[in-house]
Image 1 (cartoon, rainbow, N blue to C red):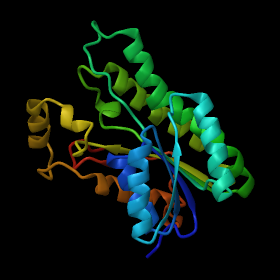
Image 2: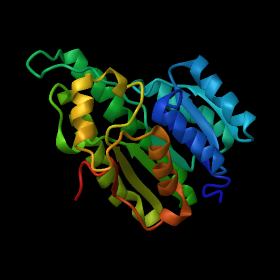
Image 3: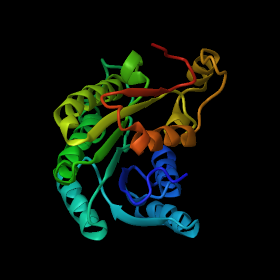
Length: 248
């Protein structure tokens, strides 16, 4: 079943990890995918794998902390594909430090990439979505945006803000058949989580009811569902993909 057949999807942070998995899964579902990230080489590799598997992909270098690059990137994507139907806000960074030692630059960098970037991308794509009266916006937040995490005041705040942004925009655009949702992964095996202390990861794993770490593909399949017609009556939701570590 090709749940997103013929749709055009813009995925940020698509060069690796969850973003790359989202691009692959959406392409398998029939979407044309615009791959966006800072690493041109990794994007080209991801696009080659998608096209080799029969999908359609194009590469657009974009730093989501730059408003100019976002505007130029979305303009290039709409010029190439004609429109954007699905936006996946996945790009994110960490600059971990205890709050008393955290530099203002580390706070600003995380906020600009993890929260302001998604806000600007929503603004950039919503115009065409409103005109066509159809759209799907899915943002990757985090369990730490729901429960907090020591040493990640900047990251947790940005991800919590992304949840609030999701709900606010969902209310604004629902009448135009545009849904806005978030996916909140728990402990997922990616390059970002690989730098977490082993003690922290093991403590988290022991508290996961399913007893294991999640995969990027499991997050990507949740994203594909929210991007599909089948999820048309879901908006303003935060879908937890965390193995049961946070319920309710």
